[in-house]
Length: 602
Image (cartoon, rainbow, N blue to C red; front, side, top):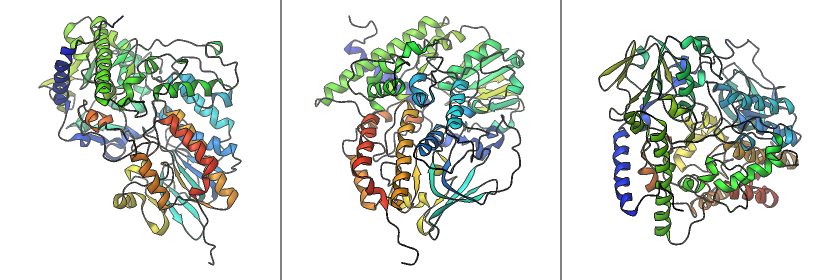
């Protein structure tokens, strides 16, 4: 039976016009410049509220086998996989006060993962842990990160509340000199960077943002001393407060219902509504997920990855909003198998997309009692234009008398902040507390932003080399001129909506590179020819999605409406195929990245 939300052919043209009109309401001439870095501009937004003043210690001048920059899942998994390879001295450094990365910082009320916990949490088979919820709360995820760190003895050499400020290759000793803001200057034979894709809080550059005299913070630095309560709620400190929330993405969708329960009044300032689908979270048991079978977690996450990468499958083990709508993500993950008739494919995709979005908009109309509010909450764009969100409580929050939705689309965001409130469309909204749920500078790690300068052979700075010759790597991990430097992340490899799975595969690969170099007395460094061959591989079969993202509503997927950057940036056949490629390469071609250095007296 056809879906009642399937559009008639003559409705698609009107829908395209509506999408374009809604997009133009939100595009800003300043693009990415509309945001400020919390660290650089307003340090108090980026301060660590969980540890207070870090304990003093003497600067380190020792030597370790591997320095890992970043204590989130990238760094933890790198450390664990290195331990499995027998590496003794692994030092993980992080500016946070403990392991966890994103989950160390994000402890706001209602925080959960939007990927099923049984595929999101890594190393479940190795640790024997079975998640308690289908979608784990943030604290369960953070505790699991610490569980892995304890199991693999990663606390032994870890340095917390410490920011790496420079990485410098010293040719004479064939080691990296690692400098930090705590005065450390130690050596490491190898450096692995795992600084994450969501670590730098961003703030909207609203005029007067520094003038607000009420209480303010970023959701990744939640101030429970002010609000009271815990991530489970009970924010009693807000009972008589007028609270403003800026941001209605994945964070806002989770935190706004929690605020609505406890705050005196909540003003939600929305530029672009999210798609908010059913979550249906529930407690789970080991029997539910077949955790009595060896390798159950690996099998489950591989099944999920195949589905969201467009691979064929016999059974959907996860069966949630991601897997049921996987084909609509084709514009984000270019691995979906396409027929030769591209015109027919695109036409069918547009109809499927419109059907899904009509379903989401119908859900809004059904859940929100005020027609005007419901209309403002409806998303008018293609499904893959923004990361989908899931909640069973978000829309209901707008039926409460203490919640006001303020649409900022026509003013292209909040006009200005005053000493005691926010101005939109000439109206002043008086506030006691202003909370920024504005997320992170996605994909901007310390290395790629330039905040962590990396100087390789001959003192060449990594970003300078890439500025002159273009970004050049082998598999996204290694670069010529920067021996024994291994980068984890999303650059020139393959991504997935389940990024922890990607990071674990990267950690296995990074540890294998270190083990191979140690066994053969070599450096980890690809040739320029190997880099060039990889760039050619990325370009071969790369999808033509520029047009799609250029027409999307502005957001971090398309650089605030500017489209995606030109040139190949990802492996075009998806994460599952990329992981298979890496496995074969390790078996057959590992020497491609090993360089045998000259002896010091040569």
